[in-house]
Length: 521
Image (cartoon, rainbow, N blue to C red; front, side, top):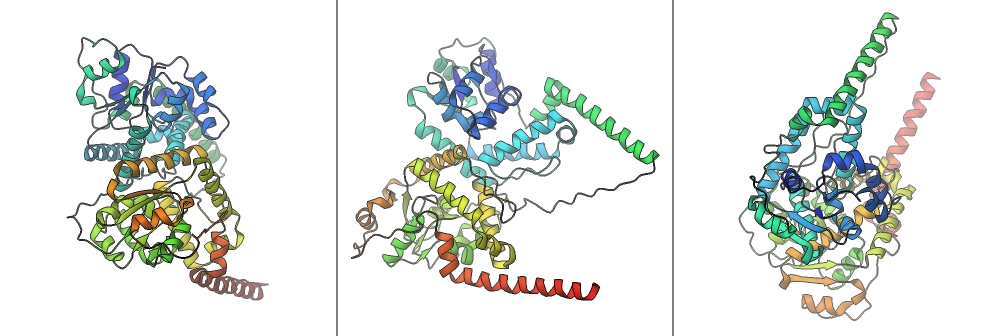
């Protein structure tokens, strides 16, 4: 293995694949990853395969590029320690525009969606896109012919986080940061290869890749043959049923609509100075509940997850949908001193723009400990019967469940569809998100306003950073072993309200069932 392409789709990946082939390298792009390596990628993500299995699968390949290998560049760089890494980049607005066009092209390409529906190979390819999109990028479409969700805000954050992680953690002596506009010279110099005697290629202009594949790709020709056979068999079956005068009607009604994904980054004039003092940029399970309590002890007005849900969820929904601006965020948080936890850590950059004097605290912990804590937390949510009953039968509880699911779907991966179902967890995807998030904060937060902190350090570094006196009491410790939901069920006023709502609704349901039984039986 000579080259690992770490740049995201729509940064010139198809152009780079063609350029590397011109240079005489054996290149595996998205279609080759699907045809030859999909199972080892699935098994690796599920923990059933090792780096040795990845090495074996890619042992005869010179360069890898495209979906999903750019998400797994760190693992591949570890598997092939001599391979060089190329991060392709482009101007962010151009990237977002190109990505949106590609999502529209995928949704509107009737022929391709037809193949995704009626060809077994096409359905596997559709699932290949869905699985990795769900793990690393956001909620995928449920079926062909449906909209591929796109939010400029979400993709801008993911683009910055991915690039920051590569720039922060790739070995500098093996890394080339590159734009396809630069042509042959820097690429060939980096790879120690002669410059070809032909123009630098340019592929997939205007998101034409799917039309091109339909015309010339052998796998797509196979999908066409499969779809023809499938549809022919279906017509034969329908004709047989009609001839036998047996008519059965099936109706499939889609009740899940992923239209909460917005479209549009917001551009406003810089905000005036406000009273916000602290923005907590650390992800959940790095001590966020402990930090919320510590900041309250320091006499700051702190808004944590429940306050974001109760007081600010609508402004966040509107902001993500492009219906609210940074000024609306400033107005919503004008009387708050500190913000922490869900969903703030995903949107810390927007709040830093809103409150340019606020200090930023990035809480971190040992990665293995963090992953173990996240897994325990998600298992605790799935297994907490009382909590899931409230999510199911209380209107407020259902809104809280949707609040978690919406932001999880946008930034973290596929959420559960309903209460009592498993909250998905993959150590690999959560590891990648954790590193990307932290790298983005470390790369882009103003250094004079940033504290990288562990709750094990106690009061002194925190108080010194905030210019506040050290309290005469021990540093707190909250949510040990994911007990937060049990504590909320006992003490939180909102959860008490949810209990009352659920009691009323379940009582009404029993009354209705009793009335039905009495009337008809």
